[in-house]
Image 1 (cartoon, helix red, strand yellow):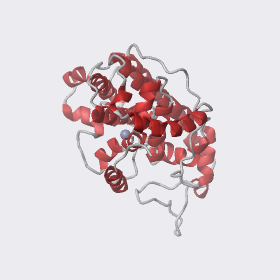
Image 2 (cartoon, rainbow, N blue to C red):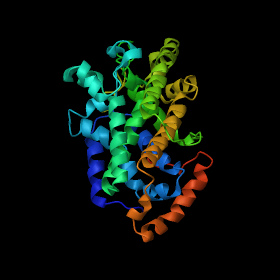
Image 3 (cartoon, rainbow, N blue to C red):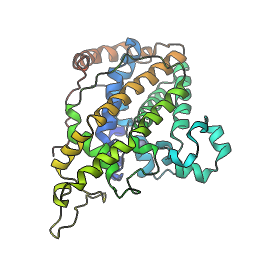
Image 4 (spheres, rainbow, N blue to C red):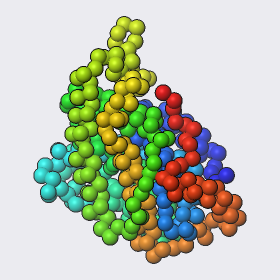
Length: 334
Ligand SMILES: [Zn+2]
């Protein structure tokens, strides 16, 4: 049993239940990304500390979306995306939050997003918290950072056509990021490149954003091409009157067989993006720690706590060496 407070689990679960469907990457995806990122940390003392709090880091992976929806925090929403097309020439985008605020008013930024600049600010805060060994803050910031890095790997978080509304593909957003990982995620193998120190965080962030943005066309075209050749009842579940069935969040419910076809057509895109999000989250945490002067954070917990968790960690690491994780029982059966 890792450190967790029962109360916080109850609060988070209640908020998630209250939140509408669009928890980006879904609960399954975000939780897996933060969980796996802890297993991928190359520095043992840092990994020990993060693993002592892995239950918290997993829970925290979805909290930024809860703030957005259930708590209706207006300042939260733009942190999760950037509608790149609306910022003009992509070669001269604002480099910092200050620059973005100088060039655009608050209304514009609220509507078009601030994800890359928010990520850079979070990194600085995390590094400072590590340097000053502020335990609670480190954990909150690391958990949240994992969420926003994951969002940056979801191609539709980088475009104004975020739910296919401009191409008559409404519902594609949650279908790609929630339904597909929920249906296929347990079979994913996460083989990561070697975790590295990031010398230029800003450059890395933009690299992630632009790489995601490049995937938008293939993501949307694969869906359109498939749908052209199929009848409505081969794509969606229909209700008794032949209309597309909607779930409680008003999202169209796709057929299990259609999800399989689309997932195949994407040729591993969801798995690759998820793996890349795990890789980058670990690199960012590791970089923040190096920039903080490599403090031994495992000293923030008692040796008894770390010793108690050591066995669980070694079991998980054995699996992780093959790119696998403990089966997530929250994965839905379709
Ligand atoms: Zn989000």
